[in-house]
Length: 158
Image (tube, rainbow, N blue to C red; front, top):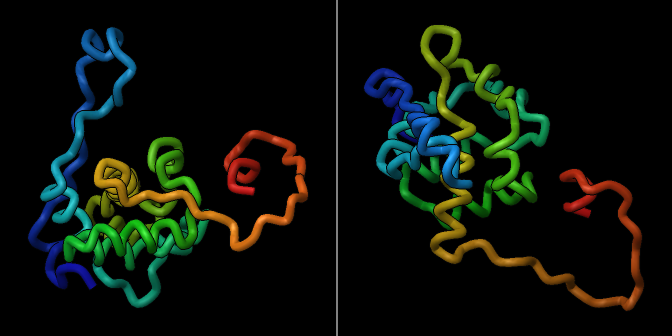
């Protein structure tokens, strides 16, 4: 998966914070947008571990090594499909999750871990920009209604 020597060739690249005096005048992201080529290099740092502890560290069980490989290969549509297989709202988790997957990343033992959170966020953002995120329609409409209590991610996904 990914680049077998990527973790040796590339250092961790994180987006820079926008200046505070600029950020207080708008509602845009805190961090500058990262180029896709930088994201591919970061995905290429994934080491194809025998036991992907990043996957185990993710509360959602995201298939992190799989979508890292797909991003590395520039297969964006397949990457978003793999991301949506376990995560209904990567646009939320890419911003809000404290990224225990990065803490669990085996590369983090000797180097800085793969920028998993940033890869997730940019993958979904690119998919929205390209029109690759489509709502899933139910197989059949029953006419029944349900009540969902709570407005968190679990309630929204229900």
